[in-house]
Image: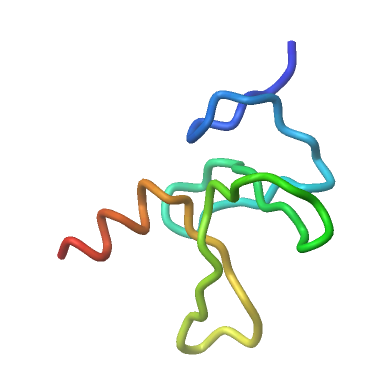
Length: 65
């Protein structure tokens, strides 16, 4: 059985799947060369050297706080 993105319910492709730093679910993140909506946001974390990803539902929850 294919793993589905919890944000858009489309099948996940391991090449374009990332893990949310808040909930740990895998979601879509398309590179700039591919069309399609991203199911996450790129975020920076204090104390982390690099970029992290936050799924759209978690990002909306964080913004609302």
